[in-house]
Image (cartoon, rainbow, N blue to C red; front, side, top):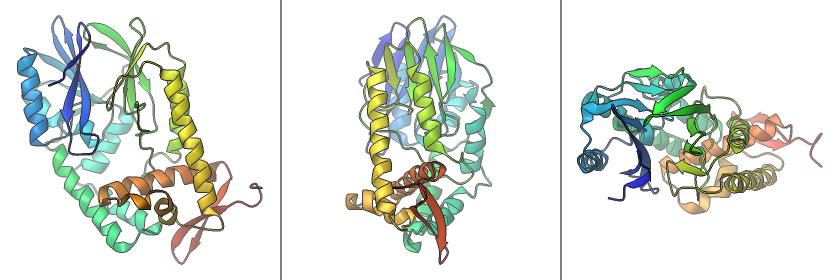
Length: 327
């Protein structure tokens, strides 16, 4: 197992996930009175087996884990939090926004899968694909059980491995995603906010923030202002030039916005536009869900900038050029 020791008391742990990215990197911090964990992983047997091996390799007694922090509510970060809490007795902290999202998406009364399917149909997704997307979402809920007893993180600073880290709110990839920043060591724990090769998925969901791409671009500029030596993401490799990577990500979104503006033309549904961009990739229902939601995030950004307008045609939402502003 390739456990990376970032600093004397910081360990970068590859926890397997059953997705193309293969791993999520969780973080263990050693302190004089025990250990702190950032992110837990996806709840399936290989991930549990890996954590138990990590504890053995690093001589971690689970009851020595003092706190568990979740950067956001997505299942590859959140899924094993309940298992780990039962094992360790540690409190599990998450932002207020993602506390609400976790309950909305994973709670016992959740209707989110159905609401996403409705959103898909309203945006032109064929009924059979929307049904498969809903079924896939329902199956994912099993991989976050048992649900942890969550505590809302209200502090602006936390102690990890004996050092004080600033809590940085960076909405975009999720409504309540947080990064952690250690100014003396110039380390940024970036979660999914900034990745080294791929761009984080920026998606619009029912009852989420209305302009997640604008949120994300604002959050990129927020972390750009920090003095960072190493950026520690949750997927991929450590980043040693944060500003350059931010420039690359912004350029990607600028190109994608131009592409979608061109595809919208005189009126297309989000599904038609997503199919024009992603359709050649033979996507699974799981991947189609993110393709639709990411397309919507970009289209709503263009609507907010008055480049596109929304109309309904036979019950389907369509996006078309705003001819009063587009030349």
